[in-house]
Length: 96
Ligand code: HEC
Image (cartoon, rainbow, N blue to C red; front, side, top):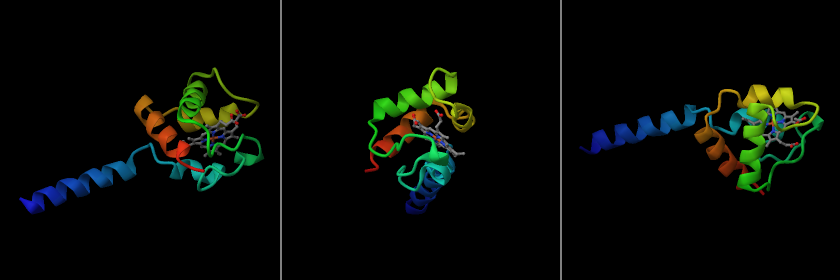
């Protein structure tokens, strides 16, 4: 029984770390904690509130948000589900 629980837990953790909703994919441009201007252009997103992040990420996805380099972000968010966007926004909002 204990082994089954551990196996299930391990599977769940592995699935979570492989999920699209990991800020690791964003850190290359935005910095480990969202503290950098991505490619020298974006706003610094650390400390944004969750709702603002969700609006921006959904907007990049449907083309209704962004500046001169929004094409870069469209590629980043295209494969994210609404649940992924919500999870990512929560992570980023926790960065200070
Ligand atoms: C290849 C570099 C790159 C990667 C990787 C990247 N971004 Fe961006 N991001 C940018 C650029 C450039 C902008 C500014 C785009 C524009 O002109 O609107 C931006 C803008 C943003 C903004 C809005 C900031 C603003 O200036 O309005 C958010 C939020 C954001 N990115 C989140 C993310 C998340 C979450 C990920 C990971 C899923 C990610 N980014 C991955 C380059 C990147």
